Image (tube, rainbow, N blue to C red; front, side):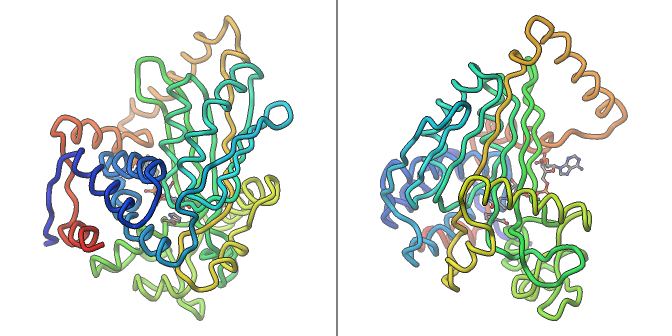
Length: 336
Ligand code: NDP
Ligand code: PYC
C-alpha cells in the first residue's frame, strides 16, 4: 500500500507557494499557481494537484518559463479579450483577463478570451467554475505537446487537449465537465508510472504502434484519443480553436519548441463565455429550470453528473480542513 501523509489545506497551499518562490517564481505567479494546485488537491484531482509542483520545477530548471512575466490584457475588437502571458505561466494571465471577459460577456451576450504565449500545466475546471459563479456558461480548451496519435495513426500529432464546460445552477454547484480528449490525461499515466501500476488497455501504444499497458512504454510511445475518430476530431478542433485561430502554437509546435527539454507545454488558450440572460431575457428562469429537468433525469436513474465526485471530495476536504497525498510526493516536493 502507498504510504500517505495528511496535511492541512493551508499547508498544501504554503508547500506549493513556498516551493515556487524558492524555485524563483515571482510572488504573484507563485500565489496564482499555488491557489490552483490547492483547489485541485482539495477536490482530489491528483493528476493536476500538488503533483504538478514537480513538473513546474522541471520546467523552471530548463529556463522554459519566464518567472516574473507580467501579463498584458488588451481590449480587442468587440467581444474579444486578448491576454499576452509574456512566456509566463497561464494562471496569472487568466486571473488578470477574467474581469474583462466577464464584463464583455455581460454586455454583449457572448465574448471570448485568448490567452497567448503561456506555459500551461493546469486543470481547466476552475476556470469554467469561476465563470459559472458570475452566472455565465462557458467553454475552454488548450492544446499541449504532440503526445497523442490521431485515430488510425501511431505517431503523436495532438496534445492531450482538454475541454471544460461550465453551466451555472441556481443554489447548486455548477454543471461542469473537464476532460482530456486523449483516453486519459498524460498526468494520469505519469501517476501510474510513479505508483508502479499498469495502465488500462486503450490508453496508449508503444513506439511501433503496438498496444501497451506499461506506463513508461506508453510515455515513450503515443497516447490514444478517447472515442476513436470522434475524440480525434474533437482534439483537432481544440488544436484549431486554441491554436491558429488565436495565433498560437499547435501541439506539434509546442513539442518542437520544447526540443527535448521536458518542459510543460507552451501555447494559447481560448475561453468562450455566454450570458444566459442576454439570450433569454425575462424567460431565463424558465429555461434554466428546463436544464434542471435534464439533470434530474440523469441523477434520477442513479447515474451521476460529471464533477459530482469532485464536489463530494471538496466537501470532505473542507469539512476536515485537510488533504491526503502520497508521502513520496510530499518528500519529493520538500526535496526541491
Ligand atoms: P477523466 O477521464 O477522469 O474525466 C474527467 C471528467 O469526467 C470530470 O469532469 C469527471 O467528473 C467526469 N467523470 C468521470 N467519471 C464519470 C462518470 N462515471 N460519470 C460522469 N462523469 C464522470 O479526466 P482526464 O484524465 O481526461 O483529465 C483530468 C484532468 O486533466 C482535467 O482536469 C483536465 O483539465 C486536465 N488536463 C489538463 C491538460 C492541460 O494541457 N492543461 C491536458 C489534459 C488534461 P469528476 O471529477 O467528478 O470525477
Ligand atoms: O495531464 O495531459 C496532461 C497535461 C498536459 C499539460 C498539463 N497536463
